Length: 152
Image 1 (cartoon, rainbow, N blue to C red):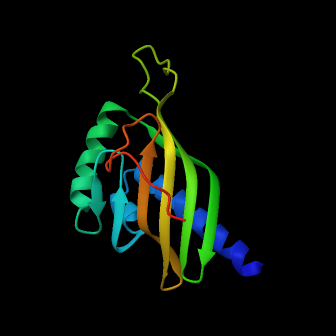
Image 2 (cartoon, rainbow, N blue to C red; image 1 turned 90 degrees about the vertical axis):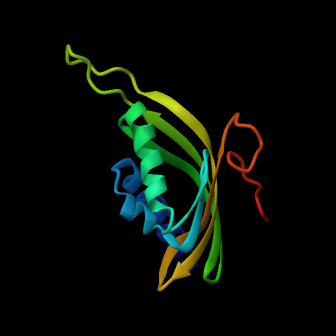
């Protein structure tokens, strides 16, 4: 039971680190959340790391320019661990808060997207890393760039 709790906690920390690094534009830190050859199958395109890091950085900066102060919120985490492999599913809410207006007031935050993650994880040198992180954005067409199929 202690190992199960420890694994859940460490996977949860990985997900928090993923959110924090991407929201703070720490793209090297974001890439470090993935195993070598890990895949981020995002809402817009797929990236294999570390080779596609610059392409991910460029895409993210364009999105963040149009939607500043992004925050990734991940909830309802469910994990299954089998030795040095695991799967995790969670919900995603992506919000943005525009910068302050000239009069100093701050516009309301807005939800940009809601969806779900389906993760395949591996333990590398004692640390959990994403092997594959898939995103399914609610309402998106069911295609390979915006959908995932859960694997039991």
